[in-house]
Structure formats: C-alpha cells, structure tokens
Length: 87
Image (cartoon, rainbow, N blue to C red; front, top):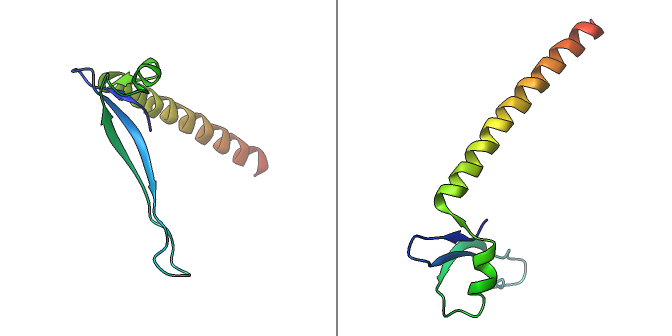
C-alpha cells in the first residue's frame, strides 16, 4: 500500500488494524485500510515526501502489468524451447 497525495493536499495513509481474539482459539482480524491526514498531522511532512498522486500510482500499476505480460511471454517462450530440447 502506498501513501496517496490527493489534489487538495490531503494524504491517504495505509493503516493496519489487528484485533484481539474474543476467546481463546479464535483468530485475529487484520484489516488494511487508509486514513486521511492533513498538513497539521505530525507525520505529514515525512509522508508527503514518499507520496504518489493517484495518477502516478495508476501509471506504476500499468507499467507493472505491461512488464508482467512481457515477463510471462518470455517465460512461456523459454518453457516451449526447453520442452523441445527435452523431447
């Protein structure tokens, strides 16, 4: 999860929640969500430096998908060549 910088300067910051089990033997609930903070928050300046706009995040995701598709294609070619060499 990434820190997302909104157009109004607000930051969406990842926040994980871990609950205590209600009874012995029960599992914990873990949730990942975002909380919004503004310039008055003590962590704002530090988090602002590592934040991405929603557009930057979408560009990054698009690149990952494209690179994954290329990597998968190359792996499938390698696998086919290897199968020919084996058979």
